[in-house]
Image 1 (cartoon, rainbow, N blue to C red):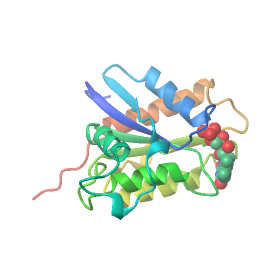
Image 2 (image 1 turned 60 degrees about the horizontal axis):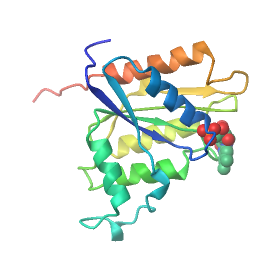
Image 3 (image 1 turned 180 degrees about the horizontal axis):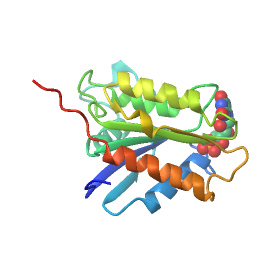
Image 4 (image 1 turned 30 degrees about the horizontal axis):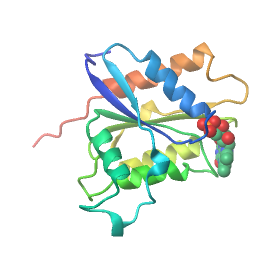
Length: 185
Ligand SMILES: Cc1cc2nc3c(=O)[nH]c(=O)nc-3n(C[C@H](O)[C@H](O)[C@H](O)COP(=O)(O)O)c2cc1C
């Protein structure tokens, strides 16, 4: 890993469930992140109103402003999410919508962005992860594709399995190590 001193990763968890597998995975990564890498799990995504241009602008809701500030202050963004009905949960979609505005200057613009997660199906939530990556990219984030892990939780306890943990920590390392290409002027 290259020098990761003081790399801050804002983490968006796509499940609100108290016993969420994905929240547990986010917490494991937070607790086991390499020295110098801080994972900041952004709480309160359910307190942010559905995105509406009428309430955005100078008087945007405080919860949305707080989300933007947390992500703006981060070096990387990591979504840790299950899949709902073949796509990302609405709470995560809503967060990305808020982070995408003002157009061209949203808090995710230019931020390296990764997505991982687990679901108890053979596919591990890959549609949700693909949609999250596409949405974040359209919002202006720099999606780091080889970070994506769609982990099946069907036959393994993803919160204790050593191979799963290693895979997720490796994904985190790839996100942290990612260096955006600087285009030649
Ligand atoms: C409304 C709803 C829709 C779901 N749709 C899918 C789906 O399309 N694909 C999938 O893999 N799992 C689906 N699931 C199952 C979730 O992946 C599973 O409940 C998962 O554990 C939720 O993540 P969490 O443990 O982090 O809360 C769905 C669950 C709910 C509640």
